[in-house]
Structures are given as structure tokens and as C-alpha cells.
Image (tube, rainbow, N blue to C red; front, side, top):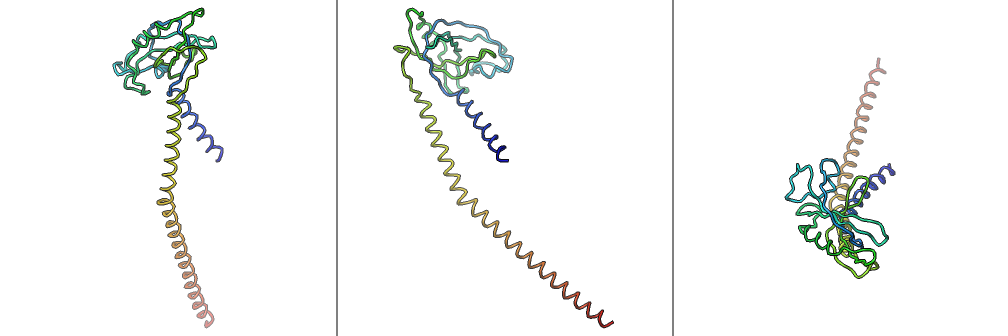
Amino acid sequence: MRYVKWAVWGTIALIIGLFLHYTLPQHDVVRVVGTYQERQDLTDWTRIFWSSPDDQSGTLANRDVQFIQTIRTNGRPMVYRNEDTGWSWPPYFKFDTASLQTEADDLRSTAEAPKWAVVTHYGWRNELISIFPNAVSIRPVEGPDVTIMPWFNIFFFAFLLFLVVLVRKMWLQFRERMIDPALVDAGQAWDSVEARAHAARKGARGFFGRTQAWLNTWKAKK
């Protein structure tokens, strides 16, 4: 049973970890090499990895999506989609797709004369199922060795830890004040019920014993 418990908690932790890893902002130092627009089908299960802005119909089968092509500092390519999130999830409230595409075009460079930039994004890149991280912002930096501090993630996890500690403390106080006394009262009530039942059984045995003894006296007279 202990292994089942740990398996359940491990599965829950894995799901929460994947959700946070997909949703929270990440930062990549890249060199922009191009941008393009391509029509994407939204009819299969991978639709969940594309944005659903407020002005998009839920029955839309396909639409044009803008992409930003980059090269990372390790020389590997990375392609980002550039979609508005609107007021939907995740709550980045992105409405400036056209402006971001223009900024990316302005930062294009070659390997001989590189311009480096930091792309803030969320999501995953998977070539097998053709999903792309969504670029949220882009800004130029001096070089590929720049250090990026994920301040939002730091504050988010600090707040999450504070929230977990607070909820745990509230739960312990609630259990101490409400649940534990109720369990004690219930245990005492059960003990009282058992004591009365035991006394009743003892009384019954005494009554039947006396009755049997009285009947035996009549048998002796016969």
C-alpha cells in the first residue's frame, strides 16, 4: 500500500511539474535568421499546443501562423511560433504578434556578423508531432554569453513555497482545533457504547444464569 501511495503522489508531482515547465516563461539566447508564415491544420489532438485567442472560432480547421527561425548559441536551430494568447490560457496577455514579428525581422543577422537576442517563450519544441514554443518577447543583447536571471520564476516558486507552507499550517491548526477533538469525542463515545454493551451482556448472562439456577431447583424437587 505504501508503494501505491508513493506512485500516486509521484504521478501528481510529475503532472504538476510538466504543467509548470510548459507554462512558465523560459529564456533562450539566439540569433534570428529568418521569419515566415505558414498555414497550420488544427484538426488533430495537437490543437491543444496552439494558441486559442479570443477572436478565433472554436470550429476553425486551419489558420496562418507566423514563425521565427533562430540559431542558438550551441549552433542548433530553434523555431518559435508567434501567436497572440489574448485573454486565454496561459495568461501572458499577448496581443502584439505583428510588432514582435517586426522586431524579429529587424534582428536578422548572419554567422559572420551575428546579432544576439533573448527570446522569452513558453511551451515545448517537438519535431515528431510538430509543436513549437510560443515567443512572447524578443530583445537584443550584447553577446551570446549574457546571463539571464529568471526573476519571474524565482518569485513564482518562492510564492508557491510560501503558499504551500501557509496552507499546511492552516490545515494543521484546523485539524488540531476541529478534527482531533472530534475524533477524541467519537472515541470516548464509542468506548462508552462498548462499556454499556458489555454491562448489558454481563447483566443478561447474570439474569439467564439466575433463571437457569431457579429451574434447576425445580428439577431437584422432582
